[in-house]
Length: 327
Image (cartoon, rainbow, N blue to C red; front, side, top):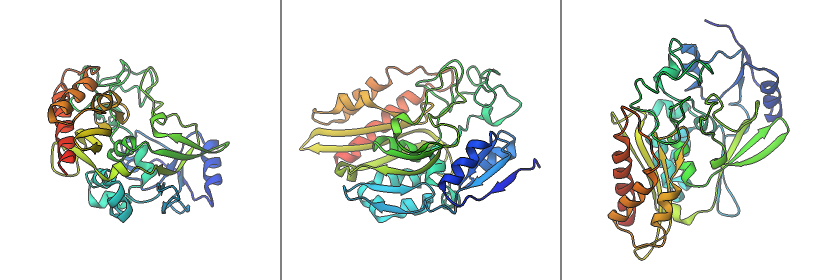
């Protein structure tokens, strides 16, 4: 076992200061991803900064009708929260589709957003991976890439982001509240994640030491008609082969507003803006949903083993929107 130190900060400012000063420190929340990576030798922190005792574990209804979710709220508690189930069912369904009940009891909101990829080459320290060891190459590019990206990948990295929660939050235009070494700041979730480019090891736009303290959902009445659909190799405790978070607002049969985000297709949760534009202002039909998905996926570059993700994503887009239209 590789030795490490353990630190329990008294407040958020202390947690941020400790991590900013320690190049090899890591925040410890639920530990459901970090501990696995430590066992594999992928991450080797010198210091674990335990943030689970900080006062970041509440769900608060906001005066404007939105919802503020603390970073250490457990996934199980969030999925069961009555306001989430009523006003943002896409979020509850995404959480319940993730991992197992035992893991959801441990996993936290903030930690879920910062999950590392489940690419097998990233997790195997004997294989080339630019995300784990910059400059070593990407074994997945011409290797086993069935579960990897079809959108927004680079020659340096074809990994996907594994979070279900992040896909739902992307569809909801969530704002991420963070505390940086210089103080607190709000980041739209669309600006949180980076494309892989030439530096796939830089997964987010967060500065060193930054702690996610909460996520803030806007008031969005349309989100009451929302869903999350996930396809995976087995019925539970498996990462997505493809997923979609969908919000649909109809005026009669005309699409007044729509929000779509895809999972398991890119380095980050993928907001399907092109598909949304195809749908807005038109009478809804399954054929329209299929054309919208095709417009979004026209920019895809499937790899040798994952071309199936295009018809799969198209099919789940049609199914999710059609179910919402008839609900």
